[in-house]
Length: 130
Image (cartoon, rainbow, N blue to C red; front, side):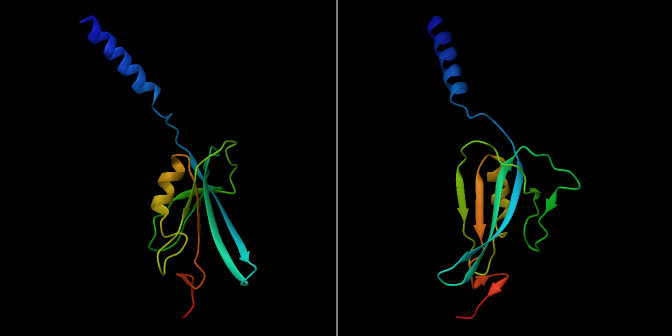
């Protein structure tokens, strides 16, 4: 009996020690237009990142892209002062940087920085015939 209790205490300690701290963040958002100077092409980019800044009616920005999940963001919010994992999202043919906002929302709230850009000539907002 004593060994069973000791085993259960040890297992409980190890299980709780290995658990990741649960934190939920608000979503900061920055829109950037970078330029591929070698080909004179714009790289319209969206960055979403965890922030502790609060949403307010005045600051909150809602994505208003038809057909895509609407997420609440804080434009140009302050970033956390810590290292965070980065995910780079590539939309499918004909999509755009907002195509996977359902994916973006989940990962940012768990502490990831997510960056997505429109593919030049093959996105909803920029279609070029080949």
